Length: 178
Image (cartoon, rainbow, N blue to C red; front, side):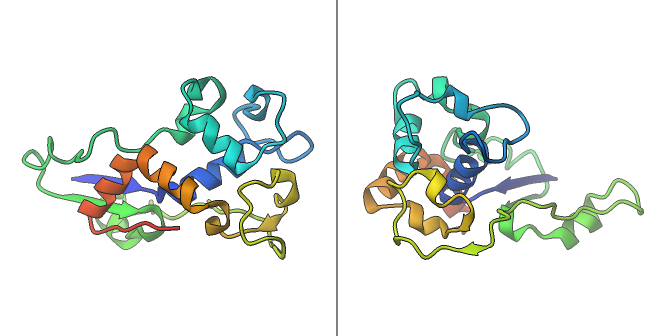
């Protein structure tokens, strides 16, 4: 059996940006000071962050573990489809935990469940609808919709950067939008 779990690239990018690049004075994530890698002239905005991600020297400033495309070629299953009897592909938000627990548990006493993987901000955002040009410090403590980070231009750039992720998801009847 092969199980592949993928994540909406739009949400993954915003989530990683907020979690890994919070400026000094805010919560520092485990694993290092990613914010300290950024050029010093920034108040960090999502638009500037995506410019760095899409730029020539992206991995100098951006943590590649969290932001590289999940799929490196359009159909990753093509090389294994004939070798395995069963494969499942799920989006992170739609994992079939019943299936996992029935077919993948190591022993009868172990269970597989969803751990915490969501923002803890609860304040309602009442600022501008689009925040792509706002410094993160203005909204970091608010629960802001993922769609608020994207302009049509940013969405187009991200579609191109994560094109294999989007293509693979579509081949599995998983459709992503902001």
